Length: 120
View 1 (cartoon, rainbow, N blue to C red):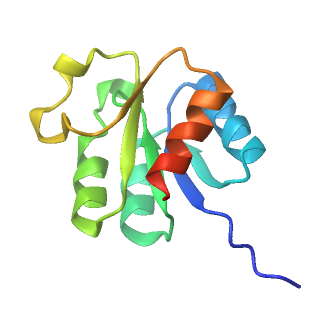
View 2 (cartoon, rainbow, N blue to C red; view 1 turned 45 degrees about the vertical axis):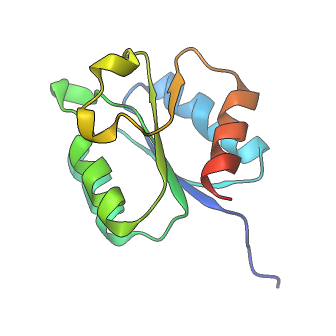
């Protein structure tokens, strides 16, 4: 059996259908996926303990929680990430303003291109 050397992407998204669209786009682009994870606690646990190559993060999660604690962990671990959000770039926490942002709505090709850029 051959080892699976496809890059793995952590997906944090609380909207079910958007999470499925992201996962489907990544799978079609030959990525492995962790998630989509919808809650901050489970996303933080994955960010701290799982092995993956990059992450796509929705900014606002369920119950009004922001994903920034996850972004902090990823930055500390040196794992590339981008935000997937409808939030304007000027409303992103200043610490992460230089991170890529994929605006909603997005295309499958947009997701794949961003994931490839993050995993180079």
